Every structure is written in structure tokens, then in C-alpha cells.
Image (cartoon, rainbow, N blue to C red; front, side, top):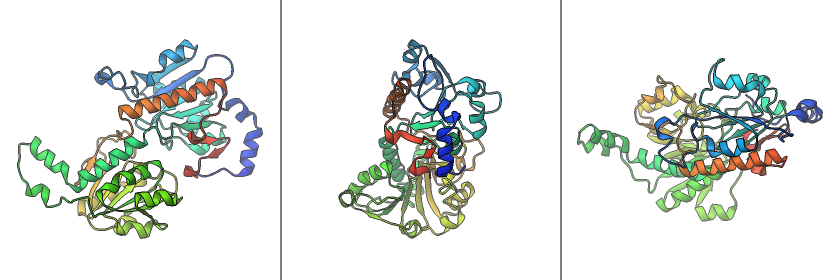
Length: 380
């Protein structure tokens, strides 16, 4: 899907059309049908009262919604023409999704959802939604901006250290009853003195650089916007305008850009070939930013010395996804942004936006991904 601003003529036409009027993000009188798509927690649901991001605990807003006369349907069943989500598309008003168990909201699904007004992402990252189709339909798309930036930045730092220190093989040795120091230390390195570059330096990228400063690294960043000079000086990071000039300098590369048509497949075979041999890559952004097979081939040859992240294409990752079986990886399911602390923040943010929606009030401006036919800058 093309992630760009719609032409002005289209936006004006939408603004004057009955479609936008009937589907704009404010609630008229009467109860609303709200559908949430989350992952099932099963036996883990009751182990922590703050475990809100699952089907069973439903962001902790069920009693609040139902006490106000709204209908709240929650499911993990989101795939195929006969799934639970499909059954509710024709008459739902609000759809809440997450990046961790994404319900792919296609143009076809949007057409079926005649009453849909509002798409909320409980978390950050709304690329599982066809944003152009949402804009054309007059829908509002919003997410809880900032809710899990600390969680993801901390996770990225952890993954850098796990890869550089070759931690995973050492862990497996102990689990398997082995003891072979050479099998780990032959490719274990210090973080100090390494050149670390982040592709994308928004909220998460800046927090990562701040956390890397005490490790005495050479810090580089590429972004569409240059950092405030005072903050740049404080962190000690250097701006690189040309990403292809920055990448070959890096011992460690961290991906912190959203998935758009511009970034989809950004790390293909040709770009990876230009990286340092043995480079370490961390990607908690989106799996589709990488060419899947190119990453497998480069890990297998040793050109990529280690690859770690928690994002896949598609999600959940099928059992035969090749990243599960490639060497020198430290992959996990999509967990970096769904710590308990993050869940508390994005559950509260979702409730706040629903309250505003019911009252016909605006959301915090930074939360909008699609508003009045226009995509947020990071998705253009």
C-alpha cells in the first residue's frame, strides 16, 4: 500500500462527502460496538493482574465500556473469511488492534465495515492497516504514541549486547550440559569502541542513543529530521544524511524506521552486501523492512555476524519461517513493546482516546496516524 499523502483534490472531495461525515471519529448518541483483537494468554492471563494486553483481560476496559452501554467484543481469531473478526466487521464502530497480534485491516475489510469510524492501535505502529484505504474511507487511525518507546529502546540495547557477546550459544551449552568456552569466545566482542548506527532516530532511536552513551561507542544516526543541536551534543551522536554512506561504517546497525513503501525491503541483497563483514543487526521495527532470504543468506555466510529482533513478516511467523533456523540469530516473538509497564501505558492511552471519542473531542495530535484524509509524516 502506498504510504503517502493523498492529493489535495481528493482530500477536499472527502471532506465534503457524506462518507466522511458518517464515519468521522466522534460518537453519536447510543451505544457503540467495539471490537478488540489481542493475543490469547491462556494459563498466563491470571498470573499478573496488570497483564492487560491479552484477550482475557482486554486492556482492562470491559467493565467501563459495558457500564456505559457499549458492546465490547474481544477475540484473537483474525484470519480467513470465516474468522470471528469478519463476523463483526459489518456493524462495528471501533476496531482496536495491536502490533503484537496484528489484525490486517485491508481495503477489502474496510469496505465491509460500513459503520466503522475509528481504528485504534494499542501500542505503536499502524502499518497492519491499509492507511490509504482508511483515509479514503474517511476513517480516523490513531495509536498510543510514546507508550512503549522505553520498552523497545531497552530491548534493543539488550539485543546488541546479546549478539556482540555471543550469549545465545553459551546459554544453549549450559542447557545441553556442555562446557566449551572456545565455542562462544571466538566471536564475542566488547561494545565499547564499536560504531553503532540507528536507521531512524525518532523517540526510540533517541532513547537508544542516550542509553548507549555510557558504553563509549561511536554513535551515528540517519533520519529525515536532524536532532536538536543541543541534544545531539549531549548524546554525542553524529548525523548522517546519506544512509548508504553511514551503513558501511557501522559495526552495529539498529532499525528504527516505520514500515512504509519507501522502507519496505530496504535491506535487500545489494544493500546488505555493502555492510561490514560480521556486522550485527537489531530490528525491532518491522520484519518487512528486511528482505527475508537476503538476511538468511548473509547470516549463513557470516556476512551478518548476528541478527536479532522480534518482528517478522508475516506475524505470527509460520513454523517454517527461515529466520527460525538461520545461524547466529537471537529472534523472539513480538515482545519488545509489550512489557507489563508498556501494557499499562497503552491500555490507559486507548481508554483516554475512547473517552475523547465518546465525547466528540480531539485526540492528542501526536497520536493521529490518519486524520481528515491525511497520513502522518512518518507514513508519507
